[in-house]
Image 1 (spheres, rainbow, N blue to C red):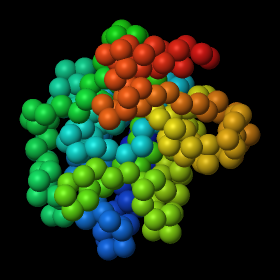
Image 2 (spheres, rainbow, N blue to C red; image 1 turned 90 degrees about the vertical axis):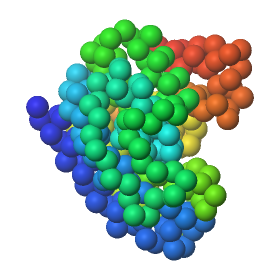
Image 3 (tube, rainbow, N blue to C red; image 1 turned 60 degrees about the vertical axis):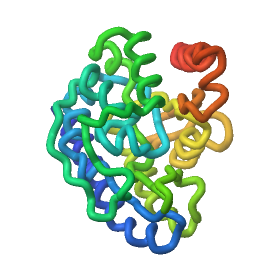
Length: 256
């Protein structure tokens, strides 16, 4: 299928661009270990694109970057390992821990027992709301803006917005370009940033300003908004045992 093939090509291009920046990120920022799941976990990510990229979704959920217990292990955005196996039908492959990985964060892959809570919350809600996988991916697709896992010396998860812009500029520009490619390949009409940072990156990529629609190079309008992030560190995500977060996401999904 042309859409899936093009998504695979775009992801490989982004992966190659990211790999070229890792040494500089580790050398010039507080990031002690920068690794690329699009590289070492490619067998899983390729399955995700192949399994689910061709169902015609027109809404893109945009995450920020991987965490150590989700995409870093599964190769899937927000991909807690149980979700990746049971709902997204990712078959376990042998993964090799990168030589520069944090010693406290080894790459175990889909056998990892610890689950990423953000991923469990997001994907469980998508399947609860839309039903089976075909229905989910006929409506939405999920990508991360930046594919790199960024860890400090202690193993703390870091995010691109906390790193020097001068160092991150080339990688973020490559990530913006990948986002534009995905939007064009899938004919996406709406981007929902999972959190305000992701919305900000989408607005920058599509010259949207702080409010209003974005615009593709071909002149097609893109609706850009955001929903609350499901992180357990977020009070909004935890309020009323997560009920308020679920209501927020559903209201954004249905506000077309």
